[in-house]
Length: 127
Picture 1 (cartoon, rainbow, N blue to C red):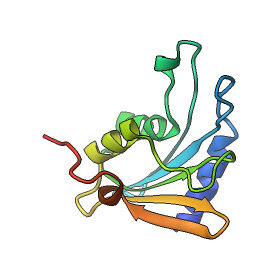
Picture 2 (picture 1 turned 135 degrees about the vertical axis):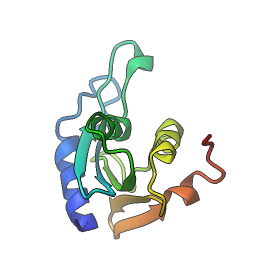
Picture 3 (picture 1 turned 45 degrees about the vertical axis):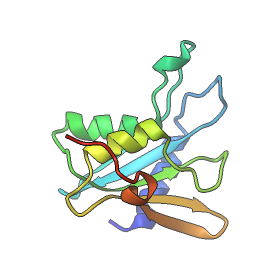
Picture 4 (picture 1 turned 135 degrees about the horizontal axis):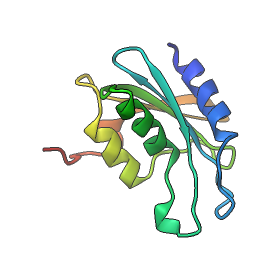
């Protein structure tokens, strides 16, 4: 699957965001080593600590399906250009990244931007 298609699916997922408190909708779509695709959106809760980010929602869907090696993830927010994962999501992605690394795809006025997770989370913790 091409990265633009992953981004298109992340854009679609962002439309399902439940973000009445922050008004910051996010969608994510990931690609696993097996070639499967999983999407997620953020959903908030009035107890803010229970909010789930789009990236972790997508990872949870992949893991629940038994797919635990992620090659790439596209992240989109209509509220921000080049929407990057928060620190918690970076650590979760690090846990499930492919042996060959994980590309993080964002978009803005200048088109797609691809960063490696290792670039965004240097010296990430893993057992």
